Amino acid sequence: MKLKKALPVKLIFTLLGIVAIYFIVSIHYQNVFLPNTTYSGVNISGKTPEAANKLLKHRLSEQQYKVVEQQKTILSFTGKDLNIRHNYLTQLQNLKANQNPWAWSLTVFAAGSEDAASNSQLKLDQQKADQLYEKLVAETKANRTETKNASITKSGASFKIVKEVYGNNIDEAKLKKEIIRSIDSGQTDIDLKKAYVTPTVLSDDSTLTKDLKQLETIHNENITYKIFGSTEKVAKSEIYKWLEYENGEIKLNTTAVSNYVSELSSKYGTISKTRSFKTTGGSTVDVPAGIYGWSIKRTSEVAALSKEVLKGQDFTRTPITQGFGYNDNGTDIGDTYVEVSKSAQHMWVYKNGSLIISTDVVTGKPGQDTPSGVFAVWSRERNTSLKGKNSDGSDYNSPVSYWMPIDYTGVGIHDSSWQPQYGGTWYIEHGSHGCINTPPSVMSQVYENVGVNTPVIVY
Image (cartoon, rainbow, N blue to C red):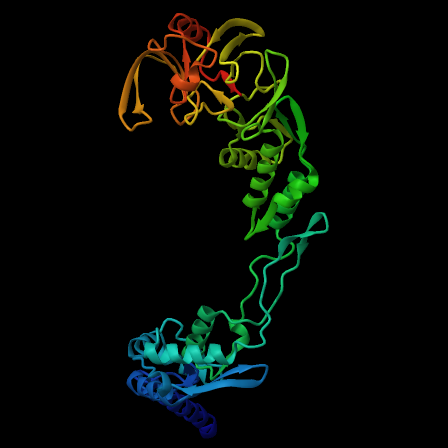
């Protein structure tokens, strides 16, 4: 019976001893970190936050780091080389506050708790860091394969997707972050591969596939010009020359489009072209270019054409033009015009194909000849004065009732009350300064029947 009573007493004392030990150890861990506690790669078990801070700061300064690529060390440095510094105390105190000292036994055989200190915001000498980055970039610059995004390129007479390229060129911003992250997490080997530039657009990208389809749609557009009475279809090969794909954007090569518009203008436009003209007398003469004629307004047309092309729909358009004489039936001078023969000193006015005025005139005096060419009435004025200089250098100021300029140098058609006669050889000694002097009795009819933009053929 005595033996049986002694056993529980021993057991009780044993248990009390275990409890006492557990209590004492728990009291110990009130001020120090639990077993298997690591921070930024350093075991700080059993240390106070202050002691752990001192250890970590020392480790940070003395630790050697290596930048490694494919098991080859590219560059090595220590914390001192960058003057790396940081006070971990606040984070360590927070970590200690989150530990339960009464749970120490649970951590003895555990893998341990670890805080990677990802928010520690290491401080370093920026100048030394920049020097390190520059040296590292210089060491890794040669013989690199450039990373490329998947893209769309021209191939033959169509478009295709070119796959992305995984290269090994270095992303400097990524490299800096990886160095800081590795140091901060206690890693001594910094893997350069993690700083490689990586493609952001892959060949199966939905936007890329959509753009490829849109490029082919645009390439196969039916584009037609209705121009000056003719039809001009834009060849698919021409559209192909225009199309470009750059940085994820479908666009047109402005130079290529501009060249096409210029060719179109040269083919159909009439400005700066000599014309073959059948005179009232029945002969045919070649009349040099004047201000009359039209061309395509290139900048405006290129912008308007490009906008339509990028819609990806068939369309027909009439070009934006500038100048005189454009129409949809393809006639140039037409059947309403003013004809002036310098040799005959005569002017005829045709309206809708009918001769309505025929009159002698006085053109420019030799040396101040009225220029030959196809011109246009670009303005009309009543009761104005014509000012200029005479051949002797004196000024003239001639009031006129009707003024119709036909070029941009001051030549025009007007009444001339000072002329006593017209026609014949009178112009040789008494000719104008280049204008077409018209009898006042006739000029009012000319003014009434000849509107702005009417062509004036002088030969």
